Amino acid sequence: MVTHDIHPPVEHSTASLGAVVVSGVVLLGLLVGSAFALAQLVDLLAWAGGS
Image (cartoon, rainbow, N blue to C red; front, side, top):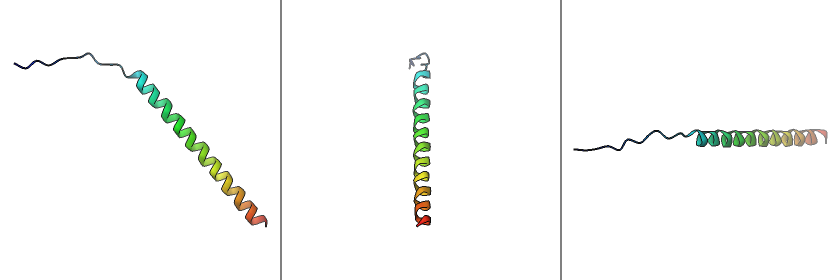
């Protein structure tokens, strides 16, 4: 006869919350980086056009 160990479900709310926070920080970093790169490109184009 085979017996199976039945474990109570483990709450993963802390891990899930951490994953959500980390992904939010990464997305915010990508957004800020993209905005900075776009601002640099616009500045470069304005400088090149003004010469």
